[in-house]
Image (cartoon, one colour):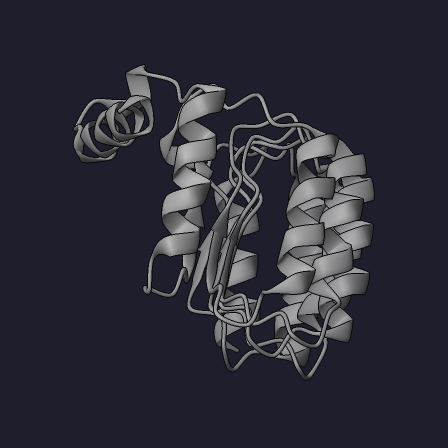
Length: 215
C-alpha cells in the first residue's frame, strides 16, 4: 500500500506542469529508479535541468558515470545544467564521454560553475570520441578566453560533428573570436548555431567571426 502510494505521487509529480517548484524526495527517487528498471521503454534522455535545486555535485557525477558505463548505449540526451558539478565533476563525466559505448548527441552543462579546466577535460575526451555529439551547452560558466582556446582544439578535429555550441555569458572577449575563427576555418562544415550572447564582444568582433566562418 505504501509503495503504491509513493508511485502514485511520483506519477502525479511527473505529470505536473509546475514540477520545477517542487523537489523529489529520496523515497520518490528510489521509486523512480524502480519504475525505470521495470519499464520496457528505452531511456534515451536524462534531463535533470527540468527539476530545480537538484543540488548535484561531483559525487553525483561519480554515481552517474558508474551507471552509464554499465549501460550507456541508448542515452542520447544528457542535461545536468544548474548544478554545482564544478571542474572535478566534469573530469569524472569525461570518463564516460571517452567510452566507445558513449553515443551522446546532446550534452548540457550550463551554469555548473565550470572554468577553463573543464574545457581542457572536455576537449581531450571529445577528441577521443566525438563523432556522435551534435549539441554542447556550456553557457553561464566562467570559461574565459583561455577556456575557449582549449575547446577549439576539439572544434578543429576532423571528427568533430558539432552543430550547436552555446557559450553565452562565459566572459569571452575578441580573443575568443580569433580562436573560433581559426577553428571554424579548419573544420567549417558542421556548425550551424553558435550562441555568444552576453559576452564582452563588439560588432566588429562578430563581423570578424561571421566573415571567418562564411569565408
